[in-house]
Length: 434
Image (cartoon, rainbow, N blue to C red; front, side, top):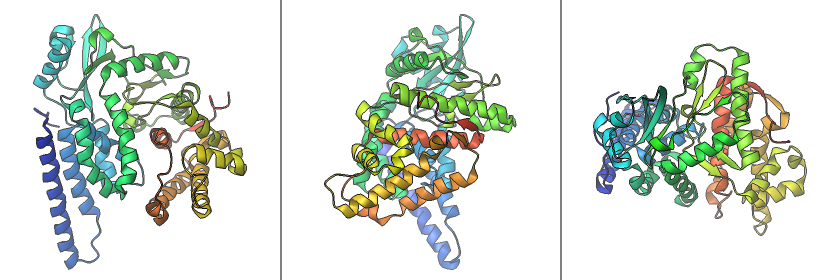
């Protein structure tokens, strides 16, 4: 993949890229319907693929918040057409890398010297590139290091990027701007934090220390002296990304061990720390030959307010499904229903929440669960598609659910997708009951 020599940084240049892409997408629709007039049986597959290529091509060149949204959307299984989900998933760890001169410029601006001077050796070709930054391999005093370098201008253009990408998200997700505002405000807060590598360094060290008691989970050591607001340096962890790991045909025992480590990691953070790694996409984990799971990115971390956690925690016990008063309390306290709304509306959203919780948290009710269960995931996806088509949700004048649940639920869904690929058979209530 060709390296990128520059990133459009001004609002005008970035906005013009979106406009040109919008025109391209419009042209694709015109061509599609012209073909469909001749062949009424023509499906949308080619149209979706072309639009996905054009939109992703623009986002990957702009990087930053726009590309991060694409990455996030790719994880929401069942929401995007398959062509978009497949293409946008490249943002997880296959985005175009920056050229050497831009990397050197960032080092000189934020660390006062070039990477070749700071380290004993520094590979100018990035090992992998994602939405916010890219990673280079370096050495210092006999240690092999991973150096994450943020793309120039990402932090400064973040808010304007989110405004620009909103129309695309509205069209793809078929949501109102009212609904998008809640989503985007929470995303904005997390992304602003994610561009602050000094904050990431602090949180990485804290969570690595707090989670050090977990079995089969490995964290890198971090180096503040070689880090700054736009550069973060840590130990290089060997390992494979999920698809490469699965291609080695690992044993069921090893897949179970990896899956257990991953779920324990999330359960411990949510239920013991109320501070959690909230970006559960495969690019943030390494599956290692010694049977340990490497966690390599704490850029996106969600602090869970205790009052919200207390309400959310109720649903992890199956008794909440049969205790009407308890379930109603959880529904009100999480902002899903309102005590003073019409009874008809309240009953509708109570049932919707009950159905959603019953499906989503089923693995936790069973204590042990086979995440290779295809029937479970078919029901899981079917429920998501059913929700997306409900006219009652479009007509509702009240926002449903707390913003604090957005990243928790997304992390849980991303976690389930990884566990499903692993087909892991694991215990699900560790660190919840104790």
